[in-house]
Length: 363
Image (tube, rainbow, N blue to C red; front, top):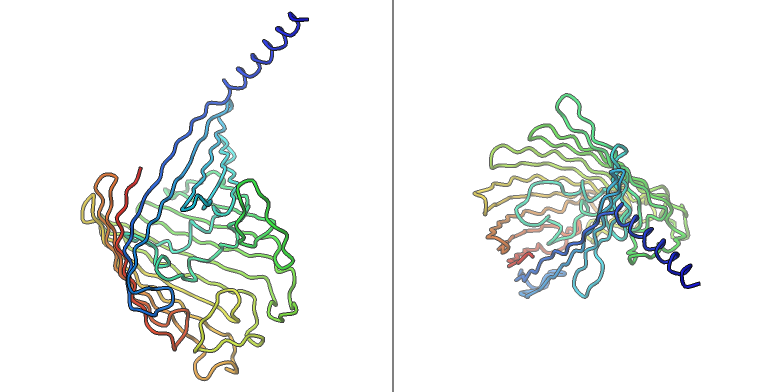
């Protein structure tokens, strides 16, 4: 009996060794620490007169390769209080492209929103923008397929296709399932980038299914559609970029009470949001860069009778941002100043001025 047991254990150990030889994996940890000083004019929404903040992010990544050349990798990012920010698993085949499964974030939308050159942060860091939210209802558990890139006449063409059965943009814990929603069904997204030398162009669109059109609220009438496109070009140390975004929440203005003198909430306000950003960035040297960005986001009620407003039905929020960044090894000093007029597409809202200075360390 003991001999039989030894033979069985030897066979099991041999099987584990064989499996281990077929999978070579590794693990790494990286992160960053930021201390920020932010200040602006008092009594401006979420802006305080002056405040100090800290931000700590830690990322765990790992992966390996199978005998047939297929690779696998995972990445999980935790922020303050060790809450999950993003978690994705990617399987890359030798000839069929890659498949990414995500929890919380990681959809294709992040590759296309606010894609203009900036020295520090997207303008949505200081003031949430519609452009930053395009397609983010795909951020919960999803699968994204990236086919092999296509080379055509010197241009590199890359597509991204995404699907989620529950496009609710509700955070999902690692290993968890998205909760059933009576309001929202499946979401779909597609994006294409074309790179030719120093020129890069991208276009993206996403849609999710409204399960309760004309619900008791009386506002949802169609499936929401959101999209964006951008073009960036670099020449020497200078980069320029332009992007436009579009958001139609499928809400009828006739059943909404939006006016020009009230803050607008994306996806619940009747009408359509459109935006554009233009940016120029200059790399002074290997360590220092500066940029200027201007952003206009317009809310249009689509109410031709103007029954819901007093004058013009279009209200535009404007953001002008100047940024600078300096790095020295693992240390960086970055800053921005952003001036906001008509925040949240509200004609009566006070202008905002937000300044941030950040000291960061990466490991």
